[in-house]
Length: 217
Image 1 (tube, rainbow, N blue to C red):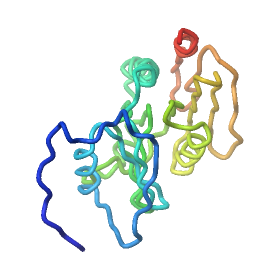
Image 2: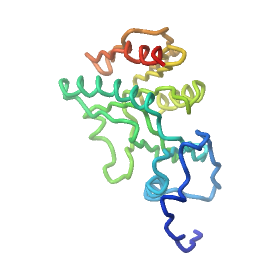
Image 3: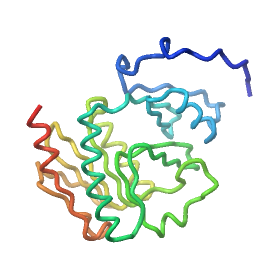
């Protein structure tokens, strides 16, 4: 392990401006580099508000902070999931700050919205720095800094790691792609609402606000 002296603290005036970041972009990491949970957490804190993910191919993905429209979409959908979960009392709801790490391949991913049952929550490793198992329900929303194709790949990755239901929402194309285990994905054109099916039984998420927001732009 190579160590260097800590660089002097950078004043706010000289920090990089995330608005100028052409994100997302990826950095390939050397094969002999090991990024521990502590190292990833420290790296994230030092580079706020940029968001970091790590792929199984050892690519460090750097994402720009979400714009107001993207943030609002995630909050709208997350609010419906939170209200449903408070009544159902069946699990835990997470936003875009959640880090889910696969400790087999080393990857670190963050969903826009996620829900995990109490049963799966109890199976996590509480000693880990990140959530150590995959939530059952995942929502990804296409934003100006993410492509539909990349989000499709990410959603397929979620399903391979144990997700039971996934929604990929593209407000620009006005489509939703639904993912379920061991079946072909299903694309819906501008649905008014979505059901949590048997994974989040009783959940209904209104999407009219998402489409109307895009139409107002």
